[in-house]
Image 1 (cartoon, rainbow, N blue to C red):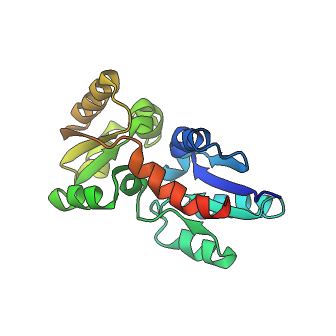
Image 2: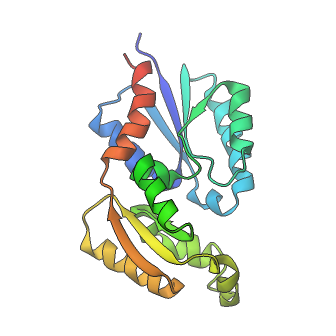
Length: 200
C-alpha cells in the first residue's frame, strides 16, 4: 500500500504546490490550502492550521505544512511540535522562493525590503490595497510602509506583464523597484526533499 501524504499549504503557494504535485506525479499526495488572507492576520494562522490538521489526522499517514513562520512569532512551531509535524524552513515563504543564500543576501543588502511573488503581484489589490484597508484609509500607508525602502519582485515566471504590474505596485508604494528572477527550482527543492522520503 502506498503511503498517503497531506500537504496543508498557504493559499499564496497553491499554484506552485499544485504544479509540484503534477511535475513529480505525486499520485498519493493531497493538497489542501488555507486562505492567503490569513497573512494579514498571522495570529489566526496556527489555529486555522490546527483545525486542518485535526481534520486530516485520521485520513492520512503523513501531514506536512507548507508554511514558513509567516509572522506567527513561533506560535506555529509550538503548535506543530504538539503533533510532530514539519513545516517549510524560514521566517517567510520568500526564503524558499529565492533559496536561503539568495534571500539572505537580499535581506542583508536592504533590511527594509517588501517582497512580492507572482501570486502577490496578481492579487496585490485584494491582499494589500484592500486587505490592509489602504483603499479606505490611505493615511495608513505611512504607518505600514514607513520602514521599507524598496520592493523586490521574486519572480517565478518570465512574464513581462507581471514585471510591469510589480513595477507599478512599487511606484504606488513609493519604493525603489527590483526584480529578481528565481524560477521554480528553489521552491521545488524546499518542498520535494521533505515529501519524497514518504513516497519511496
